[in-house]
Length: 110
Image 1 (cartoon, one colour):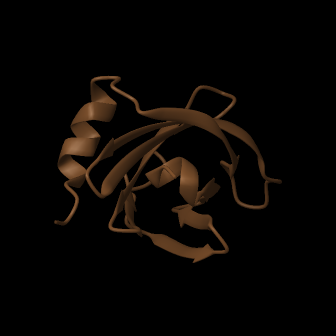
Image 2 (cartoon, one colour):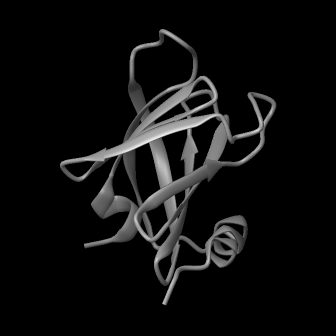
């Protein structure tokens, strides 16, 4: 059965998170990766990960069936200018100018 990213997003908006942790992130082009807080809402085989930068700016990343789908639209961009890869259990994601490194186990659980 496929996941339902819409349901995972609804859970995230309601603050109903299944996991939280720290991920590596950069908000600007050329910025060194730092640490961000990540809150994860999961539904079946989908997940919505709310990543919060040190300055309080947050971006929601959506995943389904092991694939990264998109980031939410923000003042930084529409969230569909993306690149991603999954290498040795680590998602490396770029959304607009922002970059993220998220462990697969955090996104989808063990």
